[in-house]
Amino acid sequence: MSFALAVALLLAYARRRHDSPLIDLALFRERAVTAGLLTNLAFSMGMAAYFLIFAMYSQEGRGLDALHAGLVFTPIGAGYLAASLLAPRLAGRFGRQIIAFGGLTRAISLTVLLAAVAGNAPIGWLVPVLAVDGAGMGLVLAPIMGTVLSRVAPHHAGGAAGALTTAQQVGGALGVGIIGIVFYSALSGGVTVAFQHGLVYLIVITLAIAALVQWLPRARAAA
Image (cartoon, rainbow, N blue to C red; front, side, top):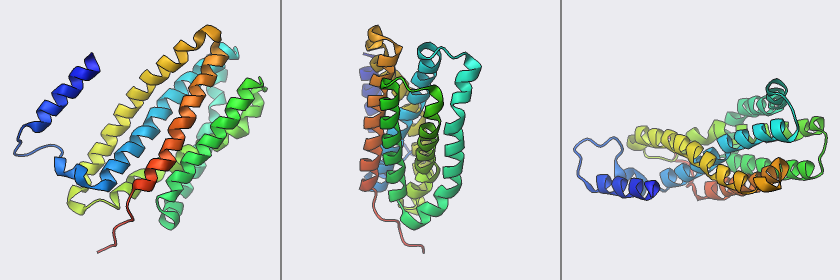
């Protein structure tokens, strides 16, 4: 009910005429903006959701305390840092496809993680998988803003950057809400089963990133 009312109020507000709108609705006529928003939204819907259910699985499913559960996240951070340093150079060479590659990398690593969890693999065996997953995150997040904005008309760049940041925040909140429904609806089978259901949702989201980024137009030629 609240979501429906929010959408109705947003549409009513958008129909009003504003002399100085925060975001010009003409911005959304650019394919780069729409594709970039959807890609950023999909990525954000997976990030906060992933960390939430993985933390719950580490502590409730594997019996780790908060400190050791936090240490399990370290390979993700290491992979993310390494990929983030390389991503700008790779994006300059491969363009939008580096984002698609990052999404596919995440999908593969999450699929391997799903198999490892189903097989009750030792937590130490997850380290390389988590490092690759972190690298996939870095290949998506680090270049996405520049990749999208390079395809937007210069006079829309400011509005597009604000819209992308907003999509990131909305996606994080929406993703946590959805993963909560997925996770807790399967919790009667145990934390491990619920985590597996959550991973399936995350794999679908990361595959969507690779598909959505193909909608981006080619980069604009430099003036």
